[in-house]
Length: 197
Ligand SMILES: C[S@@+](CC[C@H](N)C(=O)[O-])C[C@H]1O[C@@H](n2cnc3c(N)ncnc32)[C@H](O)[C@@H]1O
Image: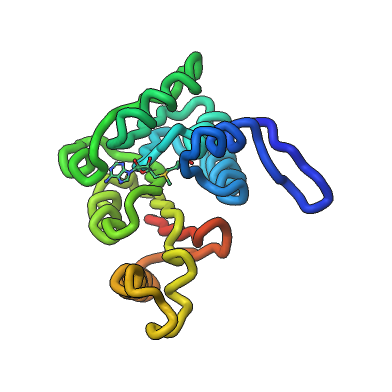
C-alpha cells in the first residue's frame, strides 16, 4: 500500500483516507507498518483477522504476505461489504461475516498469525480461543491493549465508563506478562504480540 511521507514520517495512505471519509475506525499507520514488517519477516502462511472493518489492516498483511491465505472477519455486514468492494481483485483474502468468538470456537484450522482488533471487552476470551488455534510457531497480535491509555491512570482519573474495562485490560496484561512469551509495543493504541514456540 502506498504511504505518504513528510519530515514527520508516514502520514497517510489512500486507504486510511478512505476509512476517514467513511468514518470507519482503522489501525493507525504505525500498526499497519508493524503488521507489514511482521508478515514480511515471519512469513505467516495462514492468517486470521478478527475485526477487519473495511480492511485497512487486512491490506497491509495481504500485500506483505502475498502467498498467505487470509481469512478476515467482521460481524458488521455493512463494513464487510465495503471491505469486499475495496479489496476486489485481491485473491488471497476471504472475507467472512461472523462474530469472532463464535468463529474461533467452531474453527478446526490452525493459523500462523491471528490479528485481533475488535470489541475491547472481549479481548481476554478472544485471546483464549485464538491461542488454541495457533500453529507451533504462531503468534497472536492484538491492537489497543492500552485501553485508550487508561491502564496507566490512577483509578480515580479514569472516567466511570472506562473503569471496568481498564481493570479487564490490567488483569489480562498482568496474566500475559507472567505466563506467555510476549512483547508490548507502544504503537497505535498499544500492541500486544504473544508468541508460541
Ligand atoms: C477498530 S475496527 C477494525 C479496523 C480494522 N482492523 C482496520 O484496520 O480497518 C473494529 C471492528 O471490529 C468489529 N467487531 C467488533 N466486535 C466484533 C466481534 N465480536 N466479532 C467480529 N467483529 C467484531 C467491528 O464491527 C469493527 O468493524
